[in-house]
Image: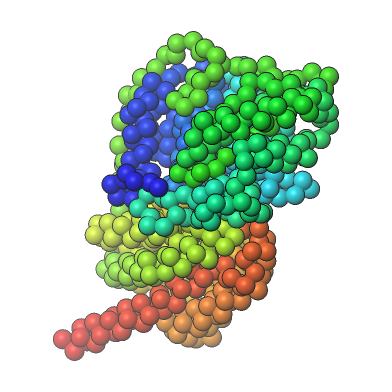
Length: 592
Ligand SMILES: Nc1ncnc2c1ncn2[C@@H]1O[C@H](COP(=O)(O)OP(=O)(O)O)[C@@H](O)[C@H]1O
Ligand SMILES: O=C(COP(=O)(O)O)[C@@H](O)CO
């Protein structure tokens, strides 16, 4: 149970501020996360990790000599935005290129990849290895789609040790890929976890039961049993991991690092009882145990659960290039091995004050249209607030249950940004563009990135002069639809928001081209989106987090498609009301 917060919406930011205040000898705050507060050698590859908050010590707790140079820290259980990843990488860059590594989750992949493309376009070399160690989340043949859990630690450590040893970006990436290939994890959970301010846990496990393979965000597992004895649990964990030894590794005589990870509220003493039997079983299997770890390395708030990771340093008789790297010293806020020489502190002279970008000039007609944009964003907030619990419920069927929370974070941030823009006299384009950036920056997650793409694409077709016509709005929505499919790679039928967005866009464009006014065209398009969203219940998800156990979601519609349909349906009525108000104003002016 999480008990201490001020405002739940501020929890992640305030947590990071407190973490930095307690660890200034290791880290300093930058927009989007933290970077080392100590000097790194010029030209050293910068290892940037990251992901959602709620998994401490992942990810800020792993920043320091011998491990990461920076961590992009998203909101609770939501990936950092593209802007956050980009700004952390820029602050961490030592001129030797940037190496990204993070757990393989849809939102992280979208945002880190987009940041990587921006950096590459600026001439900064970047490479990425996503962590895919959770053997339950996909078959061995599909292992590149597996989720990342406590295996983050082994991949991050190997990459960072190689960078500290002077390896170039290509060599750091090669060794990190090898480490990822040699890392396998398997977890169980006894309870769910409760995010700050939530009345109910994000997910639950029945009393007295154990969920097998449950994800670190409550993604469904593969089985459920009564809670076993500590020895029986050890036997289950070891049996599953010895059943999937990395290719080319001979077990008897192999050298392996066992890592028993606590998910947040399992006691160390309980884990030591389990580890006692794990050590016996691994030794009986002929393995040489190297540097055993028992502790919390990747948590899930207050979840009671544990995972075993086996990091295969070398097969029997194999010369290990990973072992010397694993021995390298590390000194971070939450993880220390060996002894690291005293470090020189970075002299931070530039106060990174938030520069409020200038508001471009706008004419009266566009400022009036900006009021309509603001009304539409307010309608989005009201719609999401009304349906937040239902959106979370359907997202929990095969996802992580945070779709409603993520849409709330994004839409509320968008409303604040749009309100500030309108108050500053912004036109329609600037108002919507500010709202789009705020949404993507605050929401994180897959839907946060994608709604940022949609709203920015519509904004780009508006202007800060004159009142936009129906054709401009339809063109913006069409550009947004193309942007989502180009960026997220989903197609109609993959059970994503694309299933609602594409029919919405094509119907809107068709109606406008046929001479319909914006309100009527938007209503027809919203009806098409609503029908399409409902039909996603028949589909099996092929993209995003829901893909892992997608069969659970057949019979339930896709949450992203539902939220989009609800939003565009509500906005139809807002447009109608705004149109009536504009017509009335024009009649009054004509009669005056
Ligand atoms: N590649 C994709 N393209 C388009 N939409 C996607 C894609 N992947 C996931 N989605 C949408 O994102 C929704 C989940 O949003 P969100 O809760 O933010 O995801 P997560 O928590 O996994 O980051 C899904 O219901 C789906 O509509
Ligand atoms: O779940 C996380 C990010 O994935 P999303 O797809 O953005 O939800 C995070 O907790 C681990 O990085």
